[in-house]
Image (cartoon, rainbow, N blue to C red; front, side, top):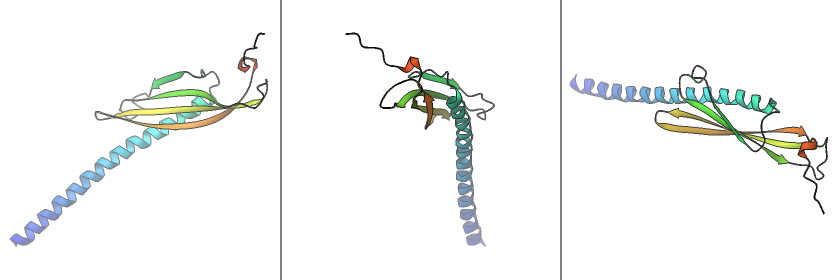
Length: 133
């Protein structure tokens, strides 16, 4: 009876340890999944925002009710990725939007980055300055 109780106690301790690890992983994955959804929403907003300044860093924080009560934010940068061979008005150019998401997991700061591309029509403001001779 003592041997059976000892074996049962060891099995229960191992089982509880496994359950504890699984619970920790589930909480970590829930945070990550929530922030991925927020990142997708933020990226969609950035892709549709044609007033976003080029070659400048824009950042912000997520509402704590959206992020599940954890401290989280974002940082974005819009750059020109590709121009046509001849830069003239009404030609298409390709912009790159880089979005970095960060959040605090305990005392550790975690991040991931998303990239997306969008087309834009070149305007007169996009033309290189004329070279004076």
